[in-house]
Image 1 (cartoon, each protein chain N blue to C red):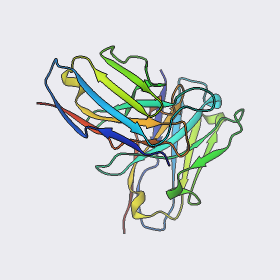
Image 2: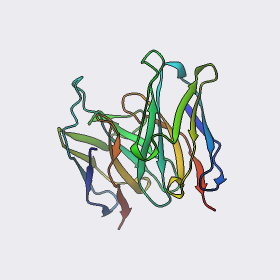
Image 3: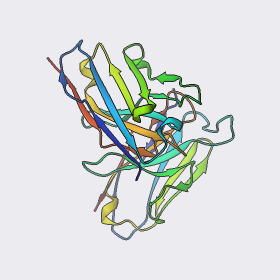
Image 4: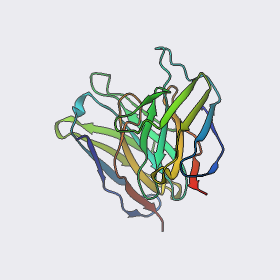
Length: 112
Length: 119
């Protein structure tokens, strides 16, 4: 199985400041069709997860442009340009290139 | 509006069975590949399995912990996804989500349905 590793696991941030989360996969996530099925999800407290970023860097519908994704192969990054109070929650990376699909352990983002 | 609504969660004894449903609306369900994902209390996300559309072959894939015990199926005439869970174990206690596979495997999530396996 593909193991997804996230750093940090906890990230206290200051409102209005940037934040960054890294995710590394144990194998390349480039699919045989040429796409990289890597995503970032946000789970606010008490809510189901929500898709933020798919195919490494594409923002999903309705996602604010302060969220951006980058990376390739096995190393990926989620950046929040200016953290807002509504960004508090747990962020998961996920891969759907290889079966079984797998998730990172999650990074808890809260306000300092 | 694209929407997924899960139901069927309950308290069940170890060894018991349960069938979850996921009612879909706002998109052409028959063309969709769908997943089940679960989240144990206080834990992270775990993929359970997926089903392809009939035009995609209609086949299913499962995570190892549930293979042979869980079965995913679909009724395209009712835009509904199912998860039949047999031989339930305490480790299956979780919130179960269905997700729509679009640009990613996890484009849209339902609110989830809670399954508790306990004697």
